[in-house]
Image (tube, rainbow, N blue to C red):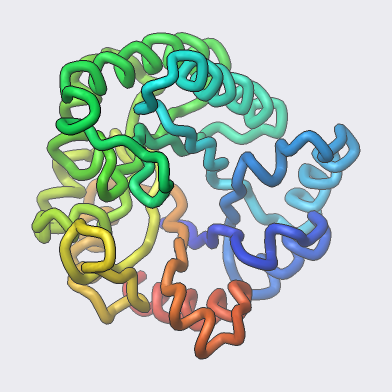
Length: 283
């Protein structure tokens, strides 16, 4: 059975574990996603991490995935190495919490003002060499830890859709390497066939993000609207996931920023229940 989850964001990032996990459970989710910059920040102590584990067990809410997303396509070699090392360190911390899946992306991060563009400031050859070199360090560590590395396609990045992620996956023979399947980013590149995407990835799907999309992959020319308002065929998407036997988490990644600001009063938590209700219609 596919589990339901929610990616904690907004004001939820400041909640203590007891409040966060009780909210997730009471709303009706099976699991929650956490962000490494928050739970592994320097101010978070060993006691805080113990509270996370206790709250998870108390409320029966699993941690489906920890996002450890750091840019691997930057000109500065020291920054690239530091980001790679941070991903590895956070994999170790995730494993210590009993979390077996981490989410990574490749970069460059298009919404950052100092971001570079592959094919412009740096060649595609160089950009791919940087990313492949980072994964040559990351994957052996993941295998030792028993952690799965779920690569997410993200618009504007080197790995941004099914085909670019397929290239990355083809370069390594590692059981630790798979995908975080977020259909919204493929939509922005015209890959609309959900049945094809799901069946092509198959057992490589380590985690799923539930997010809709409409538009094209250019800054200011797309939105991630409410579930069902974009171009993702969620009926076909979940039918294919069930057919291949996916029983992991389908986690809502709510990024309807204008709706959050203008309709929900800026509250990210306010999106959880209506989005879960929408998701359950497809499950």
